[in-house]
Amino acid sequence: MTATIIDGKAIAERIRAQIAEEVEARVEAGFPRPGLATVLVGDNPASQIYVRMKHKACEQVGIRSFGRVLPATASQEEVEAVVEELNADPAVHGILVQLPLPPGLDEERVLGRIRLEKDVDGFHPLNIGRLAQKGREPLFVPCTPAGIMVLLEEAGVALEGARAVVLGRSNIVGMPVALLLLRRNATVTVCHSRTRDLPAVVREADVLIAAVGRPEMVRGDWVKPGAVVIDVGVNRVEDPTAKKGYRLVGDVAFDEVKEVAGALTPVPGGVGPMTIAMLLKNTLRAAKLAD
Ligand code: GUN
Image (cartoon, helix red, strand yellow):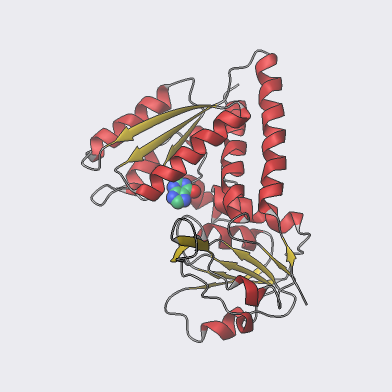
């Protein structure tokens, strides 16, 4: 059996085109152009790349973007003051504080400063708290988990009663995606570094979300035949034959798993493009909330 490849890049492009159309229609109707502000603290090279990609994506769909950069030595007060300034700026509809923050800064306090209506990353403690509770609705859902749910929907995956296994329990992906799956009535198991007999637990999954950051950890014989596998990992591995000397691989051994799974996302071109599409979607929604 060869898995259906879930083309996140194509799905994300379609969503971005819809957003671009809607943005232009809003502007033509006299509403302010949606605006996203990013806050980058320190010089983490991966964060710099991600922030640059987010600005470029905004530009492509007609969303204004504002970039605030602070040195790694910035104090808690300085970072919070920037967030407050952006909270008060009517041209800024969404605020994204790129994570991780440098050591010594209190991430929860910074995220808690973001005005709820501008929390397009969905990491404000109140939004996360609402996500974790029955009958409560977060204003925004974190972008990578939201993108994963769209991929599952597009692939026609029935989640009700399905066994979902999430590998990884990060605040950014593992935990919120587990909560979203639970809200869709999947039976969810969250695995982590202390999970005993991990391959056996993973083999139970009808839906597997791999978000641990370990290159090609999930092997073909860990996967139940026909399972839907979403690979969130983006890992650099050395490859002397590649132009840059490395290539990107996921948390899933793609060539092995594609022979067993029913559907599978590639890396790159799976989850990654969806994260940015969801950020743009949330920013447009934030702009609408401000009308
Ligand atoms: N760092 C890694 N992923 C993300 C994300 O989705 N949002 C933010 N703010 N930081 C991140």
